[in-house]
Image 1 (cartoon, rainbow, N blue to C red):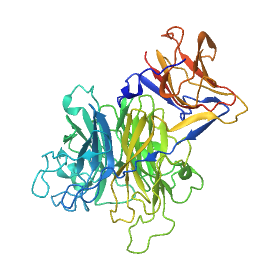
Image 2 (cartoon, rainbow, N blue to C red):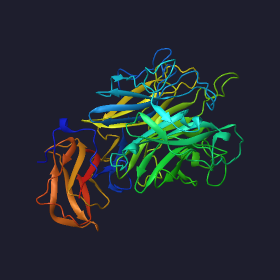
Image 3 (cartoon, rainbow, N blue to C red):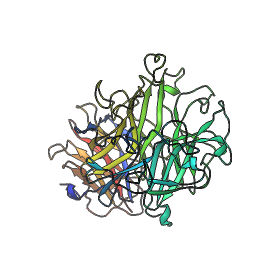
Image 4 (cartoon, rainbow, N blue to C red):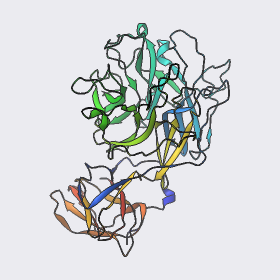
Length: 504
């Protein structure tokens, strides 16, 4: 009988550096399937939502508190970087509209949050607030106007750069050393892609004296991650700054820049993701993707949520907000190379906007905010009031079974089923599985890279759990490419959510 590797209570948010994950919805790593169907999951919203609310009048986040930001768990503490909003900021270089400062919050459980007084930035005559400090010249580089993504690299040799971030500042053209290209529209200010580094995540310094996209076009950056040899930053553009492959106009799509050193960024961009309806000919009217994606680096794959934008059913009346009636739910995407993303089941809502009258109705926003905690995956998100009145623009929590975005289960009960993974090297294999028993187990077998069974390497899975370790009669061959065949018997109710591989 297979037993759990560790008691569930011992699981932490830390993801093993040598672990690979083959998710059920990864049709590249689990491409070979017989009589199986993919069932994706919708997350459960926390009954106490929103879990982080905006502050009182005069506070750094009294306009709103939105997770155009990041949540990490470090040393037993949840840390959140989010965007507040204040109504006045009159220093030279500030973009029109409201300043959205980088705000910081902490929590022991990811549900109840505190906003520590950092004492770093003066606001309303004092420094008793939770605003993080961003230093740099020109001044307009330091003023966040949209999206914020924080990356932590504990192995960075320079301690002052172990935290990295990317955000949008709306800079005047005259402030941008190196200039900006003018494509289609001449603007007084431009969506500038700014990077910064920090030793503690609270005190930041901008990288260089110009945006990462200086010399290029505007770019609304919304993510930052490292995958393989490059740092990547994805974000949104639309026509006239972006277009379909044939040159025709497109709504918001997701593009990517890359950098080998976090200093010099490519001018060329890759098309990272376009919703299926946008790529159709003709495209589905009003279908777009919003602000790139909130992403989670799982080592061998990137997974995340993207904003599934649909235009309003009717044009807003004169004088109303331009985006009144826009609807956004959050859908699942995955990438195996860190550049090209796809939607496993187009249109599936991992987190759906609330019903009419709910705090999160109409439109919701994704963040880089995924933490595995015990048996659960915790995901934070926020509300967007497309009526432009900032109503209920606060932060909520949703949860799934740990890594339970979706499962593979038998399609027809009167037939057996199985899947075969792509080849791998590993010293330990585990399944995230439910619906098995001693009467109806899963039968697993190791194969070589040519799909030939390895003698003696078979086992049964009879226990359910989020990390059920497979046992073998002897150690796995350390230098041989292996594949895993997972067999469902006739009538099986088993659900496999993920395969975990560790080592060598």
